[in-house]
Image (cartoon, rainbow, N blue to C red; front, side, top):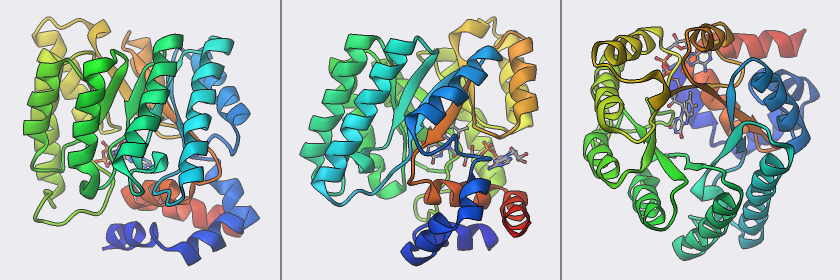
Length: 302
Ligand code: FAD
């Protein structure tokens, strides 16, 4: 109930304006967001790299409705790739297709995506296409699959709460596309997605086994210790190398677990969001864990 309300409010422009303009909530958002400019993300990345952790840089922004804003997002993503190459930080990037104008025109979005992937190829930087709400799944899988035919360094995300994900994974794995597996962060109806956590978790483990056994350097993106333990057991029992996959977690969440996995010799990558459009991202993190809502409220009131 609380989760649904928070995910609903994530789309509310009036609450967004209030929260984003409020200095206190802006400060508190730093628990989950590296900062508003690329230099903040660079600083956070260096600190993570010093702990043996790789990074996925995510410029926050989604559902752009104006062509110029989509072009600006494309240029910002290219800047991030160039910064990674110039500074030699250990990072790749994550992008959202609706930030590149998917709502305006799929052709325009694909053109911008290809410009980013050209830059990724030139500078040897991998680009992951984030998965958004289910209204975009079909287009995202199709665009990622088409991009993979031309570019090596591209992958996408599959959400275990969707019924369709098994079929998508088989298709993408056969094509050699790199996949990040997540549970899914959006509000979805019963017609397309499992509603019970137990079903989402069970499907996650099934899909994870497919990826660990046959995937191209998959990313197991979760903070769920039972799932992480299962992955460690599965690779050990099947003689799968620790170097053939990576764990991924979100910035500011379960730092203890990140360090523990690095110490055990696993690859760990942390998703580092930055930028001024942090409101929907923060709301999704609160929906995942009510304690985060308490953290934001009590710190904002302090
Ligand atoms: P849960 O069952 O939600 O949580 C397990 C445990 O992890 C909790 O008990 C808690 O201890 C801890 N935990 C989980 N979330 C939080 C939190 N917000 N704050 C504090 N503790 C927490 N979703 C998409 O839909 N599309 C994407 O492209 C996408 N990319 C992602 C990239 C990365 C690297 C990660 C880690 C997640 C991404 N997600 C994405 C979000 C994902 O779908 C889940 O919503 C999120 O990871 C929470 O699920 P969980 O697997 O951690 O398990």
